[in-house]
Image (tube, rainbow over all chains, first blue to last red; front, side):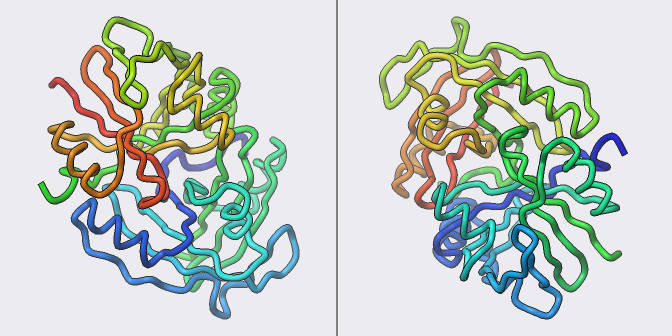
Length: 149
Length: 149
């Protein structure tokens, strides 16, 4: 593998203090339905690891589509997580852009070979994710998404 | 007007210290051609205004497509600009998401009515742009793009 196997941004992730409040603002500005606020990293599929160690951190999220890109608002709940760390050190703002991958391990190894380390990983019913810190090289964190189907 | 007239993200803008270097990293990670580094706000179309006052600030930019979304890397050159301010206060990171608008003035007025102020505006041969600070409400700056054609 000498590159990621997708060049398509599928999601933009924004860290916010209050997902409910920010979701209302998006709905109002864009004239779109306000999505439900849903728990993330909150079930038996989560298996959240932060810098390699298990974490009980969770989040409240709102997902909605702005054209071909999904916007994810994430309100950190508890710590440690990349979500809580970002809010604490940067304040609210865009945390990641996400790409689908067919092989998480290959993609993570490839990025690690470029000095880009996985800072958090976990799963949901239907797939797994990894946040890779590419801040120094690409100016942002990348999220890798691998779907079971 | 009671909403923006587009809900489609067309661009993600990232502020970087060195556009040349970061463009090389994107090309390497995604296996895509490295785009040319081009000057922005650097010609007679620029007419850059920052917080309402003329500014001679410019930028070096790299544009490339990651699926349906254009990525814009911007290296600030000179000051004052929202690009320079972001780099100075936040460091490298995602600065804005952009949407096309049919009527810049209407869109700016609508956002202003929600407390979201235009911080920079200008043009290029083919259109005009405005950056509207929605950080508190939406967690990011929005860029409005109006094309002549």
